[in-house]
Length: 111
Image (cartoon, rainbow, N blue to C red; front, side):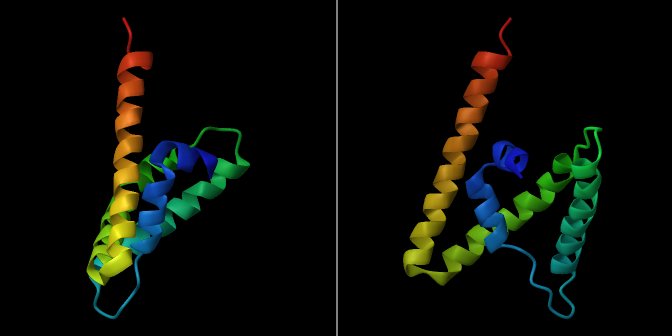
């Protein structure tokens, strides 16, 4: 779990939770997104019990991004304080992403 928070950022995980798929009859998008999350949970088991490094987080990044976008849209649609909270979480994720880019360029990719 700490690896996921470090790789994606807590704001993205909060947005993804808000945008988690809610299955409704005939909603193929929610069904497909739920299948991606289920596959990630299945792949998390070998990562937890195995000494081998399993990169299941990479496979879940697209599902997380889609869920986070849906979560931001859901907060935006609710209006009022929820809209402001949504913007605050999106801004926090932007700051974390920008910091990670700067760190990668300045620290890890030095010649």
